[in-house]
Length: 211
Image (tube, rainbow, N blue to C red; front, side, top):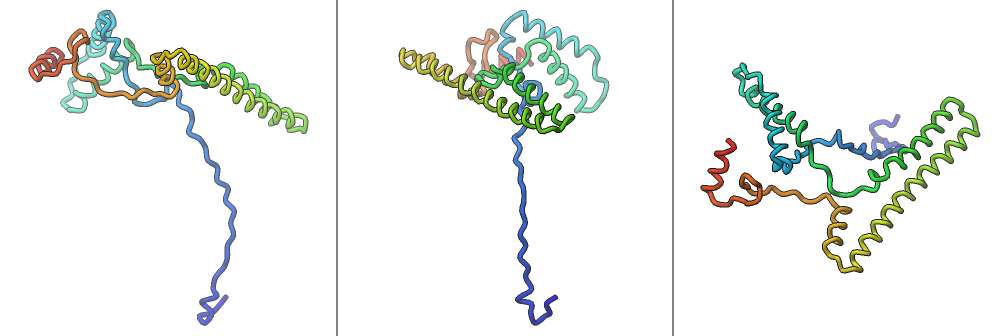
């Protein structure tokens, strides 16, 4: 080991090889998406509004005896959430997805690949390895073909609207593909949901009806 006089030469060159693997986040299913919004527009339907009201009353049968502020808040909050899930449901996404529309075809391709993988793990022979490799290639090629076919069909549809100068359908189709739509907080509306209330007295009067 070098001494104090040779401290300037006390260096070692280290060469290391690192193998980084990047993984895409798992695809979210409708059941795993957090912070979903309830489809409150359905409450304009008198029957659904009545069903929601009855569900809230059913879940709020037992009074809250606890003195905790947290209990007084979470109990009605949970009741309204359960009632909304039961009656009106969540807002469905508006943008189109080639993956979701071809879910059955893609599932069959992936299932065929998984079957060859299981066979290879149980019987690691050269023939099974070639079969699995071919299944992987077929799966990748099939998914690419499904994606290309969907986009070609959608592009032809949008181009047809442009050729016909149908701007309304052209922008609507473009918006469906390249969504999601931007959501904004609307103003306070009257009971029938048709008119937006802007004056202060009308807003206070409308809030007094609900609260």
